[in-house]
Image (cartoon, rainbow, N blue to C red; front, side, top):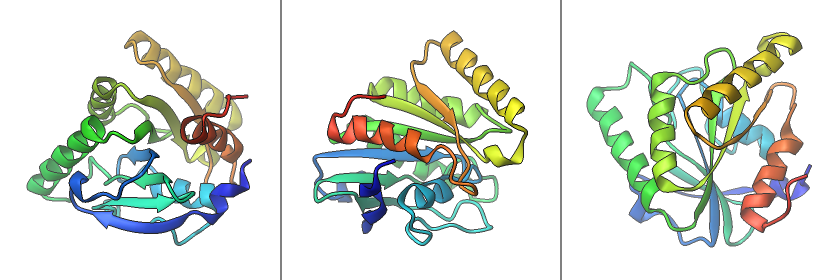
Length: 201
């Protein structure tokens, strides 16, 4: 576990990628609006108020940059796949996310957050298609692991791993619980690898 992430601070919000700050390296978090993305970021940084959480999915509507160090960042991307947001807004988010993932030069990795009980929904596959075209690192974070038995968690991870392999998608993946702070060290190791060039354990 890397305590450096516990000092992560909010820097800026942007509606469009060209409004994002200059960085040397950044890792983005993306996921369906009810997958627990903001809670995961808050747990990883030990800051319960860093990323906006709400009982109403879809509250993250901007590209939010958080500084780990002066030039290395975590990025919270707008949630996707929430039906109660207008179709026009969903399409605008999709265009912005596609532009960001394909054109953001400092972006070194993407963490896709999925509810372990409902992984790899059609909208998740759409995001993975963009990630594959962007040729950046991929880590799949299966959240809400505390909602199911440990044996079921293992089966879920293996199932997702198999589906990704069958689709030719290269990724690391793990289960995670924001509520119990389980899996934090594993995510920190991935972030260390991407942001600071450290070897994975």
